[in-house]
Structures are given as C-alpha cells and as structure tokens.
Image (cartoon, rainbow, N blue to C red; front, top):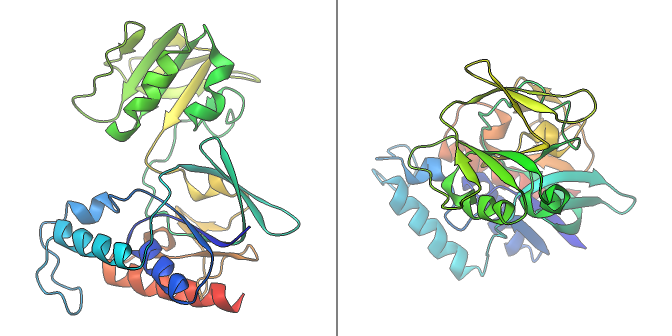
Length: 279
C-alpha cells in the first residue's frame, strides 16, 4: 500500500513527487522518464523564474538530473482505471494492480475527445490496455488506434494474438512490419455495436467489421480513469488546495485548466503535495 499514487510525469507530477519524497512518503509515480513531450518540444521558455531563456529539452534534462539526485523513477505504465476501496484506492496500470491511500492526477491537458461510441462500449469490445485484454481476441479481427509511436510494441503484441489487425495511426511514418497488420489510410468516425463492438464507421462512411477496438493514446481522459470525477468541460474541478470532489483525490497542472504554463503546473504540484500530507 503506497501513501500516494501520482499519475502523470509532467512538471506538475514531478513537483508533487519531489515534495512528497522530501517528506519521506511512500510514492508510486506513473509516467515516462522522457517526461513531458510538450515541454521537450518547446523551443524557448522565457517565463520560468530563475532559468531564463531555456529550451524545453534542456529543462527536461535538468528535471531528470534532479529526479536522479532524489532517487525518483516513474513507472512507465498506462493507468486505465482507479477504483475506491475500503482502505483507499486500487489503480489498474497495464496488467498490474496497485493500492494507494491517496491519488494525485497530473495527467496534463488531454486533448483527445474520443470517438462517438467509445465511452458506451468501453469494456464491451473497446479497451485501453493491450496486455490486459489482448488474450480475449485470439484468432479474431481487431482494430487498433495508435496515438503515439511509443505504443508500437503493443501493436506487435496484439498481432501475435489476433488473426487480423487494422491499424489506425494518429501520426506519420507509422510502421509495424507484421503480415497480419494492415495500415489504414482512412480514419475512424465512430465505434458501433449494440451490447459489444461490431464494427467501426470510417471517415469515408464505409463500415469495417471488428471483434474489438484497442485505443492506445498517450493519456486516458480523467473521467474514464475515475468515474464520477467532477469536470468543467475537459478540466478537473479543484479548489485552491487542489482537492477534487472525490475524497483523497487531488489534481494539478494542465488538467485543472488554463493557463497551460510550466510555472503554474509546478506550483500546483507543490500545493497538491501539501494537501496530500494534510490528508
């Protein structure tokens, strides 16, 4: 049982993890060691106090150096579900389960709205985790929406199980060299089915029969990770102490709303950490 699970390895998640580590809390921190891609691609950051005119790549490098000094290492797994338990929370990440007394959501601004029908059929043919649910589709026909090249190995895993994989890539130069993987040139318009996925409608209005659809994005929308979480549009509603409407759940950074600024995210991560300590 961890004291806290932090989801997200951007500036807000890092700030929260650093502060809780300094207070000797038992933390599990989910995210990639490459940290925030949005920060990494920033050409010049001019408004971060104390570090004038720094590139995003250099700032991330400094962040990683501090992580190493503090012996902090994120767990590179995708969190797909958080459930309340009698003692705290259960976190499902890939095909592993973790327990924590409290939660900090620092998942960034999740821009993907999802496909029509995706929410309704989640758990009924729509999955966010290849290693969790791939075994259900042995010798079957599936679709995979791939939002980032870092998940290509999961397509390879699914290709070794399924009879046929239709691959929808959300980026250029995608290549998964398996004989049963077909890279699609049209996109997904909607996910269809009565009680389970039966097909997807493509952007050219054609229907493609499927037994299941795996949606592999960089992040899962907060409302899908934790049902019942109060939102204002795409943003998590918090008070000044980073508290959400769920007792023991806190949020910080871009996922709580504008401005989408590194300095704001770092400050909110600090606030969330101290709220966790009080909790």
